[in-house]
Image 1 (spheres, rainbow, N blue to C red):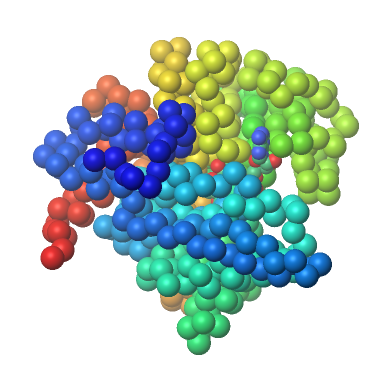
Image 2 (cartoon, rainbow, N blue to C red):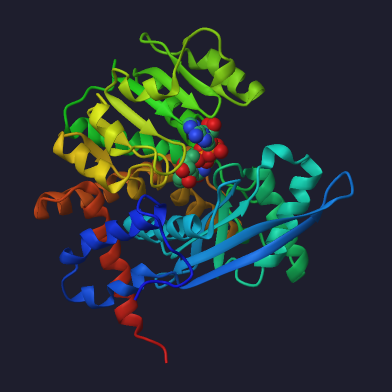
Amino acid sequence: MSLSYVTPSPSSPWSTYLSQVERVVPYLGPLARWAETLRRPKRALIVDVPIEMDDGRVCHFEGYRVQHNMSRGPGKGGVRYHPDVTLEEVMALSAWMSIKNAAVNLPYGGAKGGIRVNPQELSQKELEKLTRRYTSEIGIIIGPQQDIPAPDVNTNAQIMAWMMDTYSMNVGATATGVVTGKPIHLGGSLGRVKATGRGVFVTGREAARRIELKLDGARVAVQGFGNVGSSAAELFAQAGAKIVAAQDHTGTIFNPNGLDLAELMPVVRAEGGVGGYKNAERIDNEAFWDIDCDILIPAALEGQITAERARRTKARLVLEGANGPTLPEADDMLADRGILVVPDVICNAGGVTVSYFEWVQDFSSFFWTEDEINLRLDKIMVGALKKIWDTADRHHITLRTATFAVACERILMAREERGLYP
Ligand code: NAD
């Protein structure tokens, strides 16, 4: 039976997720009898977040925390601040976290949170109040052993520090392990900030090797130049690739000879986007999808690669830095055209992997070097991708369905072994 509290539209993230689940069910064997577990979140909390604004007004914001599945361990997943956040979107993001955490074999379930807000319209003080009140409201279901939030779109280390402090005040003890992605001196991990982009690079490097695409000189187009997109771009540039285009909410810039990232990054930091960068051609946003490139990295929001854009792209390899960037019909179009997609649920798992390292380091109060972190990350990502690739080859399925097959088997096996309570 479908859920009564959401009516997903055909191209919504939750519909996309459900159709991905349908594709994997035939490969689950006897575990398929548990598949309904995957189609509904374990727990969804909606909270009212009222704050007093700097001018004395009281504003109310809607917040969510969804725990999709916790069969394999505590919930784990980021918190997003965006005006378009909905319960349904957070449900999909939490479900993708279940798949992702299981795909890289982390001892976590999947969760996600969000507030429907445009953080650019808030002062720093208002942002802090919003974060603290939200943390208090969801405090009844989060915790170092229950559910561990992390940064996502428009949230960062400072917001994690406020979340950690608020939770700690409420429980009466400093609980660094309640969130990951914290500042380094508050129990954060070296390498966490760039970990998602690094994971995109590592899986991209492995995929490129398999399809005999040389990174040296490869042309890369990146949509979303925030944490994930810019970190991935920097690593590809270091490997000799040319970042020929970058798009974010401020516009699209193009240089067929490669953008100079050392020059671009300070502009992005100072002006909040790529739009203010002068030493590149400014092109129409829609023209981004027609650019001559070898590798396309969507690293912004969901639903960006439609069937129409999938038909137009010239890339040979798509690396999903963002969560849910490709609609199911676009997935089919890319597969038909022989374009390889490394799906979000493995491609961007580097962030949560280093979040796991952070959580482990917090518990043991013993911290690793950045080289150790990066080496362990590389090893986990390469190993996980290999298992997925072997599964894809064995069943003649896409890497996305193969990732779901590996992950769902782990989740549902845990479900079966634990048994149903009572
Ligand atoms: P961010 O806030 O740092 O950056 C988001 C980027 O997307 C910005 O450059 C923004 O300008 C751009 N953007 C927003 N709307 C856009 C639009 N309509 N068109 C083009 N660009 C647009 O966020 P982030 O942490 O880099 O996250 C990006 C994606 O990666 C999200 O899908 C997120 O869920 C996913 N992700 C993030 C992490 C992480 O560790 N931060 C981990 C896994 C997945």
